[in-house]
Length: 143
Image (cartoon, rainbow, N blue to C red; front, side, top):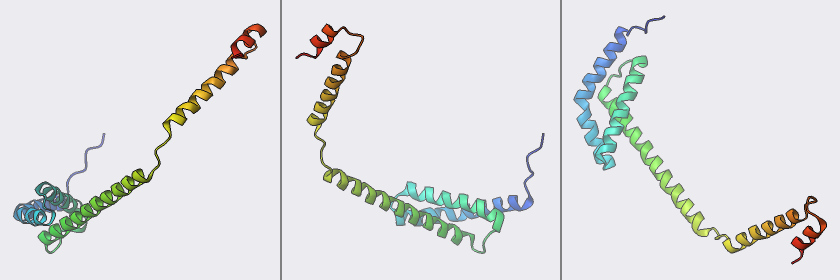
């Protein structure tokens, strides 16, 4: 059985730096994102996404010279992505709405008639089954 990999000092140091930067910068980042997005919940989510990205990237690349600015820029890029996704969703929803308005309503009565015709045809085939006597087949198919 193998033991889990030990944390390296650099990973621990990165976590300490990220924690310290987060404590100093999080309120400013969330405030700026709230102004941009108009939504405190979304702003907090975007800031936390930037924090997760920092934990992930800084462990491999090292802490940038201006970690607060890096977090702010990353969070703003996440906000831009969120705005683009929301706009794409609105546009696609509008397109679907237009397509539905322009679509022709199916003729449900005709569709039901077709089903009835198919059912009648099915009954004709059943009534012509060779298991039935000739007299029974003639009686079932005579209308």
